[in-house]
Length: 295
Image 1: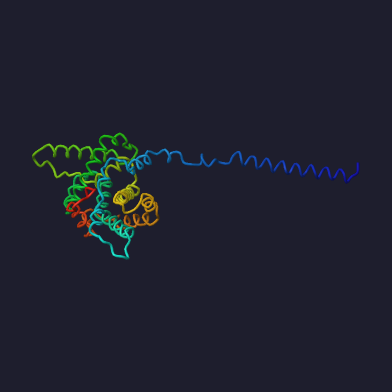
Image 2: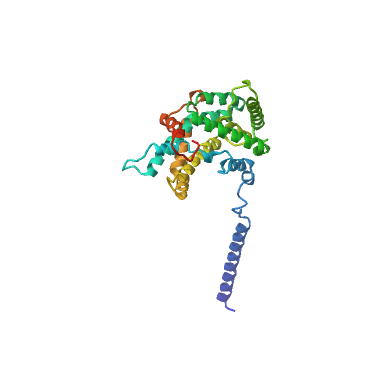
């Protein structure tokens, strides 16, 4: 055998060994590569906080929100006919923006205070009642608040997040609030100024369920936007796909975040109506000749 043949064979062996070594390295990398499924954080995915957040975002939550248009029906009735340069959709967009601002400045400070200080939920309830001059808005807030209290007592109470700081305290104060509310309804004497407004109770319930304050506040305004959009669909302002497009749009997300940023440090005693015409639209709703919503 020639020397050149031996050298060729040795070179071929060296090349095969290099390929084998490279293949082993690639195989080892594949075997120890983390799966995209196992890399997910299991504790976060299985957290009861997410479950509670989804429960409270459910449109089927029996709060009676479907019965209210938040002044939209009255707004439409008082803006007929529209100017030629204004479309129903653009008019609704203006109303939704004003409605979010109105709820943000009148209710969100009480929502945040109810979350931060659940022991003051009865005082916050009384203060919100005193600062709500519109009878129709007051009635709607009380109806939804008492509905939330019923949902808590009959369904959500078993889901208290014991690992969350303040959850048990919030649950105790909600229980005491509900007891006082029932006693005041049965007694002919004024036991306490208990009404059952939606905002403070929402904050306290969310704390008891272990939600964080920022998602809780965002969800409050997001649910309000959903209610208004649902009313718009039933009032034939737009179709369901258009409503979902607005809900999913970046504009609504930006608007909610901006509103929360403006009211985040507003104390309940500084809360108030920043859209005076909203109280007029809501207040005149019950004067409409025909209507399909309670407010």
